[in-house]
Amino acid sequence: MMITDTQTGTRHRGNVLRGIEKAAGTSTGITGLVALYLASAVLQGMAFVLSIPIFRFILEGRSIDAWQVMLFVASIVLAFAAHMTGLLRSSRISVYAMCDRIVRRIGSKVTRLPLGWFDSTSASKVSNAMSEDVQTLSHLGPVVLPGLISGIVTPLTVAVAVLFIQPLVGVLLLIVVPLAAICMYWSVRVLQRVHPLERAADLRFSQAVLEDAALQPVLRSSGQSGMAWEHMRQAVDDDTRMGISRLKAEGRPSMFFQLGTQLCFAGALIVTTVAAYGQSVDAALFAVLCLLAIRCVEPLTLAVQYSDELYRDNAAIDAVQQILEVPELPEPDSPQLPESYDIELQDVGFGYRRSEAILSHVDAVISPGGITVLEGPSGAGKSTLARLISRFWDVDTGRVNIGGVDVRDIGSTAVMAMSSFVFQDVFLFDTTVLENIRIGRPDATRQEILDAAHSARLDEVIERLPLGWDSPVGPRGALLSGGERQRVAIARALLKDAPILVLDEVTSALDNTNEAAILSVLRQYAQDKTVIMIAHRTKAIAAASKVLHVESGSVRSVDISDAVDPE
Ligand code: ADP
Image (cartoon, rainbow, N blue to C red; front, side, top):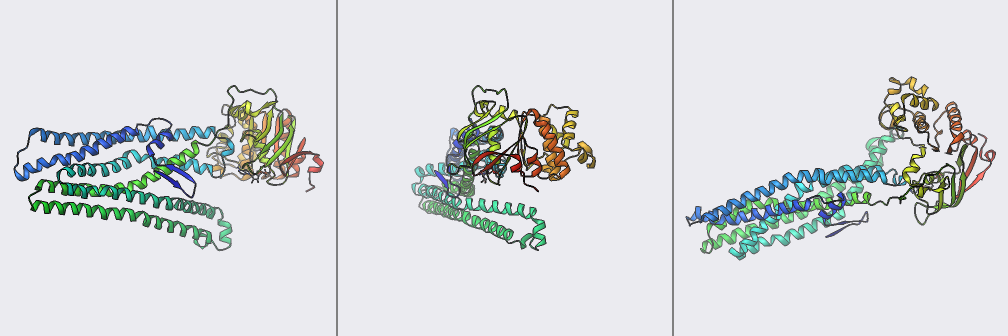
């Protein structure tokens, strides 16, 4: 069965077992689990059939052989043993062989993904795959498979056996099979339509909640906070409507199946009763059918609902695979390390989409010994250019050389080791100021960290914090101001002391005094290093030894005096 998610354009191959093995990257033992559940379900069905002579013995006083009793007991014991072995194994398989491996594979993939892959949505994709999707898959072994297999296979085994004892009753019981298939197909079709719409509504709702929190000052000042904000009200209404329509849509196949199953069992009981009057069937078969109805109708109905779970498992596998299949940058077999750190762009062309070039035929040289500023209008491609140097992506045409060696021959790990970045949007970990700086060079001494912090003008910040250097900065550095966060990130980069430093609008949140002080530190740092700084502000541009103007996909060198606007 191939299920196509029409909204996202993704395709979920119906073989969930193969999907799991592919996502885990190895054999998980889930097929063995299916075999155990199948064996248990068939044995349970056989136990029902083998109970007929026992009922005949009890109800009608007919003779029974010892082997018949032994077979009955053996089938019950073996069914129980197979089921329990399956359940015990399923926890190990789910936790270690499936979920743990999938989480580790995603974790390891994330470390190899091109840095350019990471944008505002990538964090939620990875966290959803590692938490929600893996959790969905964890139900497969211990819940979905045993429920689905025993719900269908046990009554099916009995129905096939009854076909030989009382054909009409067997046929009535077997009608449930195509009925289940139709309802499962129906259920999956419904999910195919509703699931992407519901996911999209969920996403809009959570985005609206985040926006609502971030926009509180604006919304309150215009009297629109909470549900008074049309955007929020719309998102909540859509989410509720989608939830209700999914419940309604999902409920129909299941109700239809429940009704059909009850009718088939009722028909089988009526036929058996009528036959009993005509002496063509004994009370034993009637008793077994009653037991079967009591024992199997509900699990059978639940089995149809488990087909929904299979759809969700396929969707989860698909989400995991989408991350695992992101192309990685080709890495050299024997990386070549440059001996110097001058950067040269030769006829560079690059676009995020094939049809849209952001940079074309770019030639530029960036030398150590001074700050090279990239300036130009917003959206011109300055950040893209700076990131191409550090191999966030590979160029489409031309080459980027460091010390005369193509960055593709140097390899991502070595390029990263020789570069430091400070971006406008600084990310700090929820730990102390000191530890946030230490990440730049984990083996640095406390004194080295303090020196870097001092250069980044952090002393005055530390004096204000209650625990000094050991003060926590809060989630994402929320306890510090934008300018203070930038200074922590600059200290981190200074501590790393890498030969190439890329700075993207790093002085934008600093006051004049701190900006001047940090620019002077950076100028000093640049004396024997390659420093690239994206900047708009006059002071920053004035600190440059070279200015490259980026506009309309091309780059040209300009005089510093031309680039500096009088403020
Ligand atoms: P600048 O730094 O000069 O403001 P950028 O290099 O950030 O410009 O962006 C250049 C163009 O590339 C813009 O049109 C921007 O929308 C687009 N862009 C930037 N990053 C991405 C991305 N990850 N995916 C797709 N388009 C992007």
